[in-house]
Amino acid sequence: MSQPTAAGDAAPATMRAVVVTRPGGLDALEIKDVPVPARKPGWVRITVKAFGVNESEVTTRKGESDAEVTYPRIPGIEGVGLVDAADEDSGLRPGQQVATMMGGMGRSYDGAYAQYVTVPAAQVIPFETSLPWELVGALPEMFQTAHGSLTTGLDLRVGQTLLIRGGTSTVGLSAATIAKGLGATVLSTTRNPERAGELRAAGVDHPLVDNGTLADQVRELMPDGVDAALELVGCSVLADTLRTVRRHGTVCFTGALAGQWTIPDFSPFMIPGGVRLTSYAGEAADLPADVLAHQLQAIAEGRLNVPVAKVYHGLEQARDAQADLESGTTPGKHVVVLDD
Image 1 (cartoon, rainbow, N blue to C red):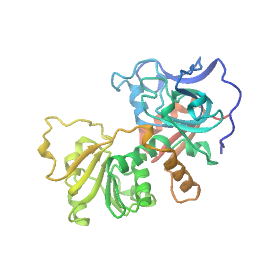
Image 2: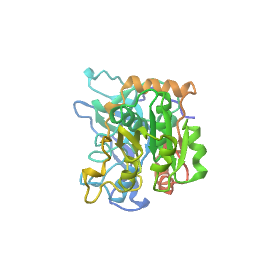
Image 3: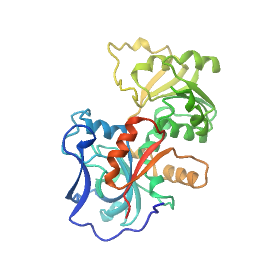
Image 4: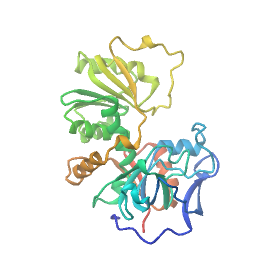
């Protein structure tokens, strides 16, 4: 396995990158030689060692993102690597291990599908670990979204009950492991009964088969409803998810795996009386360095499992990674490692 190493020489003039030159199929991901990005004041240049592959990048490649995304674009909303250059007063030093994610990365400016990426310093999270890059590369967006949804979104507490709808997604699996670490009782869903074992392996107490109507199943287990629900499937099932939550409980809308982000002719009265509805979009700051350090330690000690689906080596395999992600046949995170 590829291990984190110290920083190498200064950045060259050009680098290899995956570029989406136009919206399209997998052939729209082209590997090109492009200039190494110049670092602006207040920004950090990172030597990329690994990056996770996400649905957002598939959406960008297909041309289905919002107007924030323009072409040509280097995709990649997250990455891990080593600081190459930073302001002296940034607190970051060359060779330091860092993670970065979100904040327009890979959308309004070029992302991590490249040998180097530049990002605002506020988006950089330092860490120290001997875990391999292929494992660390799975974490930033997945952990940030899961942790932020449970804390900022739901304010989950010890002893509470949590429903995760969309439980076999990478965020769903991560949320389950984090929630168990917080001392919650976890209910989580899958549309395929054969994948219930994956949920149990992530620590889920009550795997549920989701046929589109879930409220009755949840109420059989928790007659008063759950304390909190994390919605990852989307607006097509949101009304049903709201019915799974107790009075004064909270639903956090974080994702739309089913593709529906809005509700036509929405009425506030679809929300049951006393139930709270919030959302979480997330920023890098929602995963503080001490929280990431705690999670890395838990992984190293075997107390926290990381759902990695497959590891790919080199930018040339980015197409394969996106294809496998779209197929949905392998649960967990797809990670591309840039081997030395």
